[in-house]
Amino acid sequence: MLEGNIEYPAYIVLDIPAPMEEKIQALRSHFDAGRADMPAEVTLTGSCGVGTILPGQEIAFVAREMDRVAARFAPFQAEFDHVERFQNTDIYYLAFRNPAPFAALHRALAETEIRFHPTAYPFVPHCTLKLRQHPTEQELLELFFLNAPKEPFLLGGMSLYSLPDPTECILHHRVALTGSQVPA
Image 1 (cartoon, rainbow, N blue to C red):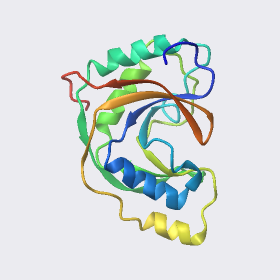
Image 2 (cartoon, one colour):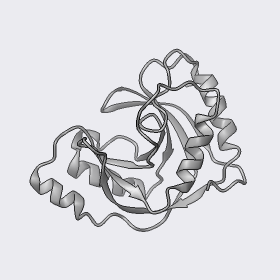
Image 3 (cartoon, rainbow, N blue to C red):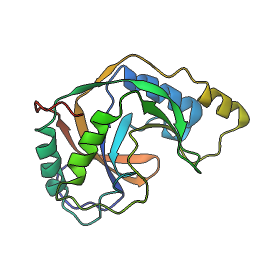
């Protein structure tokens, strides 16, 4: 699992646990069926703030850097707020009530020795519901009036995934947050 180099676009994410994971996958199956089976996650690196991990880096090296960050931070509670859309895109996502813990983890990962592609977009913690296909008028109404799952859930693990294509992902590494620092 830790052998080889990063070849495809690679992301570091926080894993959304069950039962919230099933709720996200059910929403995705309604709005973006092609991505319904993808892991439910919060992107920490790869889409905004810092871009995807530059290819050619050893997976084991990236994993060690992730492990160092995970050893600093404690698991934390998260809660969804509402649906938003990234400006000038067809990407719709669940925003978080408190984005500060995600920003702290993002910053810590960005400060590691991992090299990332640059991106012009500021970091926004999010859980994607719909990606790439223009929504119908009915979907737009459903998305913007969606009663987002409101119950808090515990985020306690980070993963490294590569995406050879938009509907396939390869898990390279998973690590638990085990530190004492509450991300804020």
